[in-house]
Length: 99
Image 1 (cartoon, rainbow, N blue to C red):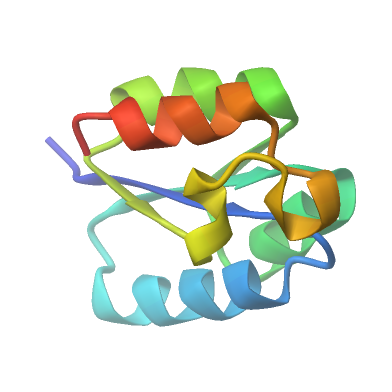
Image 2 (image 1 turned 180 degrees about the vertical axis):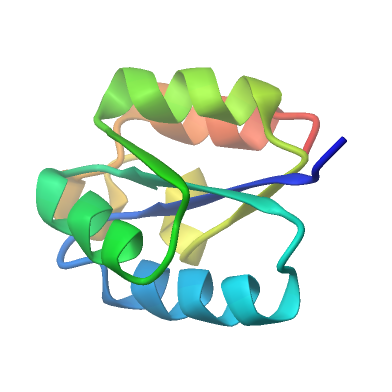
């Protein structure tokens, strides 16, 4: 079974794009899932090599449940961070994940 790595990012997706590119190169057998707080971030991560992508609060919540590993900026665990893009529910889902 593949390791499921969920990359979460917001804003323009720059950090997420870099993370996806690095993970794709170093973990070729992992399933990389891009989850953006907005469509621009999701698109940037998909272009960098993520296998699948989703956008929005519910996508963060759902994918945090099934992730083996979650990576992203520190702000993904802080409500109202990333200029308000991270909702309290998103931060809680990431923080409570078993990943």
